Length: 246
Ligand SMILES: NC(=O)c1ccc[n+]([C@@H]2O[C@H](COP(=O)([O-])OP(=O)(O)OC[C@H]3O[C@@H](n4cnc5c(N)ncnc54)[C@H](OP(=O)(O)O)[C@@H]3O)[C@@H](O)[C@H]2O)c1
Image (tube, rainbow, N blue to C red; front, side):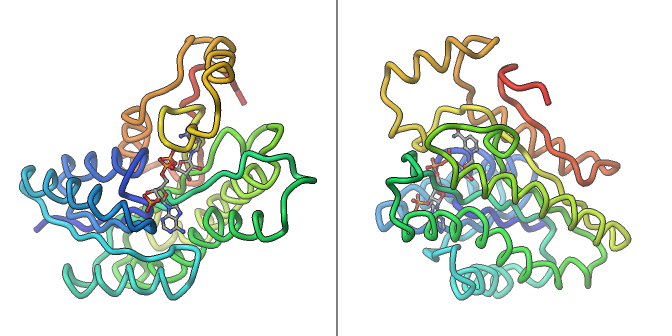
């Protein structure tokens, strides 16, 4: 029987790449999204999953709210049963604005999506993993969690918090055979970079030792490694083209 994975923000970008990679790995995949326009993206992802011989479902639910996360997990369990093998906390947003110019509602929203979604989903999924004495959680952080970035103070704060969350959970649940790891991507070509203009993108690419913005497949590959390597917990991988070597 196929195992079950849940990916938040599975419609586009890194989420989509990880959904499809999980499908190739033989998982049924539950994905959520928030924007009305992304239902169609999820429909395409589901079609591709079914072509691979696995199944899935998608659900519109705001992952920044506890109720939204409950809705996702309830739908997953109703369709696929109560063994949840993998949780990927991926949903994330960026404000890309000087902190002193932000309204407090802007950063409250960002913290809700980037940090509370991971905490809520983990809180709701963990009892299933504890019961099964098995599970894998992969949290998507960022190189922004490891370094300072102008106009990203709110974003970097949440991504650093995700690393602390990951490490503590790894210690807390190791004796339940639940591994918790993180990925800190560098700059990867997805919609999250659409607020950055072409000149800035070129300047960024020129600063990267490998000379290019990354591809979402390398993040899917990192996720696969973390899921499959059963002696790895509490770490972060940082595929970033060499721009940061922590
Ligand atoms: N791309 C990069 O360079 C990069 C670098 C480092 C870290 N990351 C991290 O990687 C993750 C994915 O980023 P991405 O580049 O793939 O971004 P993206 O292309 O903008 O996709 C963001 C995803 O998050 C979902 N989402 C946003 N708000 C949500 C909410 N309230 N509830 C549920 N889902 C929500 C979006 O759903 P809709 O489609 O419905 O809007 C979409 O699926 C984020 O955590 C980001 O911080 C990205």
